[in-house]
Image 1 (tube, rainbow, N blue to C red):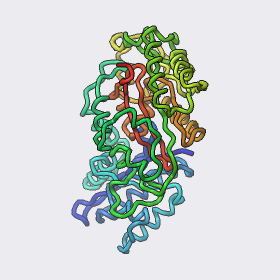
Image 2: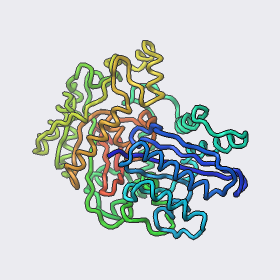
Image 3: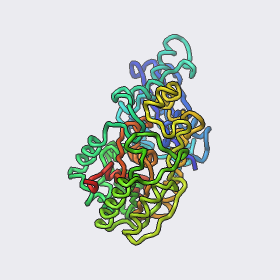
Image 4: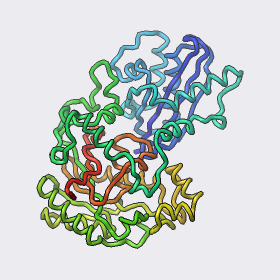
Length: 441
């Protein structure tokens, strides 16, 4: 079943005054814009414009896939709370609009989340473009819109461009760990993070603040609806312990090494790393299943751990690294010298593939999302070790945090590092660890 995110906004210059709305449908896995809607609606109030934006966004999502599960994100608490059924609809102008929105898709397919205004810039820009067009006596035209470009730029301007392959981007791991620890109010120690997660409401208390906010929990002034993170006991989550393989001969040289290259084996240093992580996981004693990418470096790492734990290794094709095409075996600098245009396109868009028919990040995200969902269904409530590569680990973390695609370049993942994500029955996720290498010291 397809999943969409709808972001909607509306505005009135005067309240009531000249008004317009904007709405965008996004692919939650890749962040890709699937549809945009905007319209100048004449003189109206902010609330009317907000509801008009919601109606347009839901209609666009239904037109794409009538059976889709839709998460609506808006910065209007009024609309979110009323459509979630937590606030009564008293104003006569709002009742027919709310009823129209409710008829577009079955209620079971739509959930609502409040977000701060600064996180709704794409829809806000569309609404302002519509009002600007109305001021000129025109209607909004998609071909003239820069909202999607502006939203992407706003996410990426605050960080410098990457200077190496995705596995070696040098920013953010320590800061991310510190932020996760601060959000829990406790140290991010691996011994506690790999313990079995607490079920139900206590379990979600360990989730990072950013994750809870993405699910709308910070917004609701009344009790959240059932099915959100602070809901009744949903049982123990599934926990994926994410292990990047040990070093190969290519790792210290920081060369692109995906699924389309030479499939190198572990180096002597990599074998020592695999043995060290095996001892660390044995000491924790929580891993129940070991699943590996089909590539040799992962299978060797996974076998070292499985032998120490007394478990078998299951090979999962969906956990393979992306195919870097003609970049396989090259350094970032060599790729930049030989394929500058292709490299820049790859850095700018998750839909761009490496030179020579490699796999784009958007395609990899779809593959890894499907693999994640299938493994979650097969291992509900269990702690599973996934031995995989830089890109799959980063994608799983990115999706759990609701971070944009460019965040793939803002995480560092060392060889034989451990990360962990807990997945709850309501769809919420908690990133519990990122790039831990304490077992290698």
